[in-house]
Length: 229
Image (tube, rainbow, N blue to C red; front, side, top):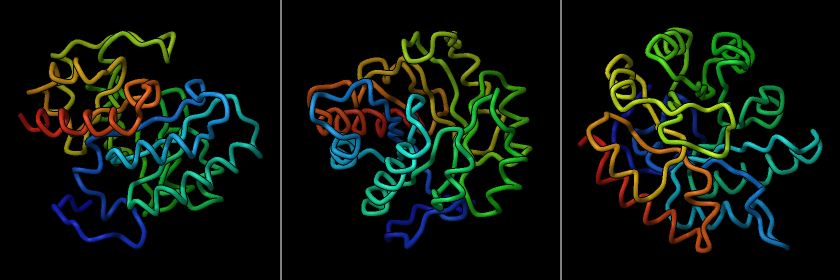
């Protein structure tokens, strides 16, 4: 991967042209937050207008046809904004639509097998909660890690908060980008300064706010301030 600070638009996004700044504000979708009459693409566009730098489609309750339709629409948006687009867990649909990549958890398909299916260019993100999991994911071909839960969160019932020491140990142990996830808000993002993260992955901190665009913009400002501090 080349993490040079390039600013020119990319015709397509793949693991070889990822940028460190792509990970600053990593938005994870959740249709639970949609208001009456809103479409997922509506709120994702607002997040992108506010400066979200990465989008993951994570919709566990949709059937395959509806998920495919959402994926195609969100992918088109992300390409318009030159922002990486990955799909949570569903390697099959990611391959079919040519998504930029996938994100898998510890209980999903392991990164090496995902790489065999998607090929050399696609982005693979892996969730990790320990140094061992992080190092193993990197060795198996992960391009970035989602590490958490950093703070208590309602989005995953089984998530246990990690200590800051564990987060620091993980960022020190790997050479790929790390995004912190779990219970992150604009306010507590400041607590992550000095941990070595490359960004924050959030759901409600963007999509659960009344003004999604402003929420994304404010979070981007804070994250830029704390990354590499």
